Image 1 (cartoon, helix red, strand yellow):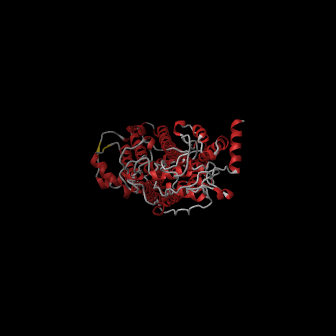
Image 2 (image 1 turned 90 degrees about the vertical axis):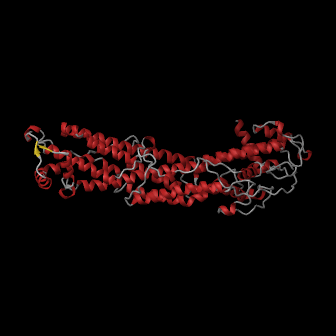
Image 3 (image 1 turned 135 degrees about the horizontal axis):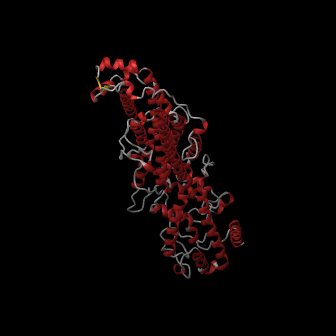
Length: 565
């Protein structure tokens, strides 16, 4: 994982730098071949043919002698050994290399969100499962048959909690109220089985729930704790999912025509102009990169706010809204509520009879029920050895500590892509190399001014028929997804759930925790970036400048020796 340098430039592009290294290393090696095999003055293209074949292309595309270059569509129209077919191959190769470069550059980010989403999701789901099993085992041992006859009440509680977490449209407050009402009805029947209690009578009992408080303060406390803990957990997992999907979409770049041409000019046009070893001028490299990833740069402000909101919510995950600390002792808390009702059962029955009327006798004596001592056992709390670690293999605190570090490291990624790529070794010229760098038009130290970051300043005149509005629309969709998620995260921080109706009310399984509103994942899977770079002028240039700079010659020789050892 290479996020540690992202505060300055973002190291998630290291592998991307290697891709650019491979390009430049190949070109330098081919330059060495040309310097040996071809006489520049003779205009013979045999050296270029050898280098072109070494790239994996067919020699049929290479002319025997230099041509005027008027057939070139992207590179400078001057004397050249590049045919139209060669240029077309360079264009296709440039597109592939650039897409691969950006894919590798964001691989760590995408991997982080995928793996951490999976870990948190597994943790929360298995925490629910373990808690339900623990409650069931303890209640079977303690209450026996009376519990087993009414186990569906508790099973329903966990089913609704699971449905809420996996994205169901569940009102946690109302669901918990219903649970305590059902538990009151079942327990009142057990404690008063000598009477016939009709559905209407049980409904009457529930009306006195708030007034009588049969379970003491446990329902009120548990409602607050469970609601806040589940809102926090579900929203955080949703946030990881949204970050994952946004990163996937903006990383799969579908390059526009102008961007492809600009990258070709950056990487391969020096080859056609005889400048085999000249590295791109830094400003030229930045202009191309900032143009081709303008959409990602536009995403940066919302991404930063989203990361800040995620980090803010982690404080609740490891603090007062810690779902692990809420769910682990839930059986103890429910048992405490049961004890409260047992202790006040006589007074409670009297008050209910006063309010709802005296029910009819059932003909069964109280002693015949055999449940007089059912509720006389309390539960012990978990010991440290019994705390579950779940399928994620770790506790929540360790998961949170890990994700906080990864989130901080990813915060600046989208804004620093061009700088990191261009400053990686063997990509853009540095120091003394700037005096002989490739500026997209010629082998010169004169470099064009870096284009501004704003999209309107990056895009000049688009190609005929080129739709430059589509990339904006796709990026805006991802911006909106982040904005909506950020708002949800901030609400969850305050313990509030933004109500919504999920498209699948019963969603579950591997997509758990999503509960994603429609806007959180929008648009097709592959966004298109804007293309800001101006094509080079078709000014005629001499083609005799085929000198091999000493630094790159040394690099080429060392490369060959390294590969051959």
